[in-house]
Amino acid sequence: MSVGGGQGGDARGGARQGGDARGGARQGGDAGGGAGQGGGESGDSQGETIRLWRSGLDANGVPSDEIDERVAVVLEFAAYVESTPDEIVETCIDNEAGKVRVKERKRFEAAINEFAPGSVEKANVVRSFLIHNGVRLVAPRASWL
Image 1 (cartoon, helix red, strand yellow):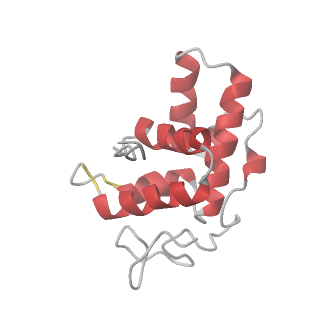
Image 2 (cartoon, helix red, strand yellow):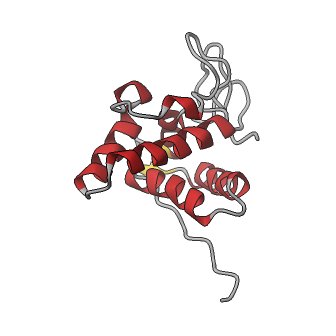
Image 3 (cartoon, one colour):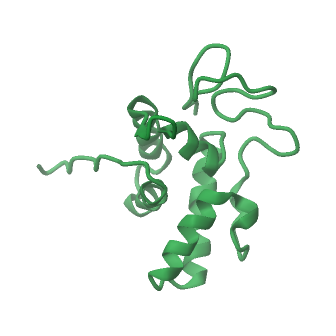
C-alpha cells in the first residue's frame, strides 16, 4: 500500500537520502518496524509519538497489557503503510505552519480503511493514535445515515 507521494523526495516535501515517501529503506532499520516490536516495551525505542500516546493511555487508566495490544496495532498499521509512527505523524503535520496537511491526512484515512476493513476497533486504535498526536481526523459517515 503506497500512501506517500511526491517527486524527488518524501511526502513532507524534502529530499531524504535513501528513502521515499513511505519511509522506504532507512539506514539501520527495516521499512516498517513490524508489529513484533510492541509487547512490553516502554515505548521509548518506538519513537516519541508512541511514547506520548502510551503515556496518555496510561494516565487514563488503560491497563498496560491493553496498551501493548494497541501499540502493536499501530505498529502493524505503520508496517502496512511502510513507515514508522513518527513518520506518519510528521507527514500529516506541518509544524512550521502549525497545520495538518489535509491531502496527507486523507491518504492515511483511506489507508486506515484499507488496513482494517472489517474491524472498527483496529481502525479506531489507529485513529486514536493519530488524534492524540495532533492529527485531526474526520469520522467516517455511518452507512445508516
